[in-house]
Length: 132
Image (tube, rainbow, N blue to C red; front, side, top):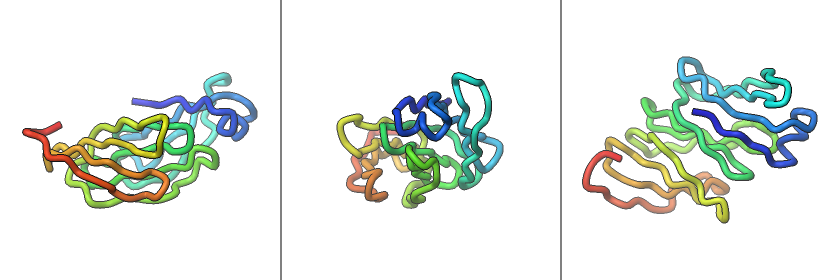
């Protein structure tokens, strides 16, 4: 799974081209790919086994399902801003484009977790009837 970050500030990092961020699920990094040139512009070190990734205009959220953590990557600098713990098995993320709230499924805990990506903290949890 990958996510394109076509925001102007992010495009300036790669010389004006939009980027895609791709988790290297067998490694410990996320790859920034220049979409216009089809070249790797950066490898962003993360915790091992990044699985899924989603973003808004300012932050990319990377789920490390086997480690129970999220890595938050700054969308302009393409550097890790924070690692958020407190998950059993984070799997999928959706980010509200109008806010800094990401909704992350925690499959093993049977929860939907709201995360303030700007502050880098869990703000609420909702119980689900089964794995999400």
